[in-house]
Image (cartoon, rainbow, N blue to C red; front, side):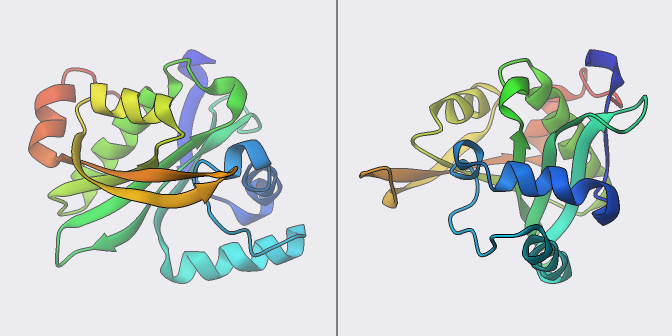
Length: 183
């Protein structure tokens, strides 16, 4: 898996079903999406097409180089603002690929792509309290906690805080320039 992983642009024809499966999986969706406004694959397809028109900035699928078949997850930027020089980032891996280091490699590659191709000063992440592993690993990776919105999300009988993290272009290249390589 290690050297065969790559990022490629989302393709509606070949990727929609894999994306639908991960976004409708209750264990995965709570990590990144609040409200599921679709029940069927055709509804999801239409929803994604609408999001590509105004919400997503860059959307990549994490897959393998050999045949493009193995679907590991996805990474996207959203709420891009050229005026304010920032965007937000979301990375989701299928459960079996978490805790393998793959997320860190993909994040470095995608952040390098964003900082190289857009005039971004900062990239932001939002992470809920219950996603402790993601929160801890992103802080260890050098993201700065900008703030916390207390009791932002009600999930599974409890309220959870939303943590807002950021990394600037300068911080990113200072910390990761020696690791940057194309996957």
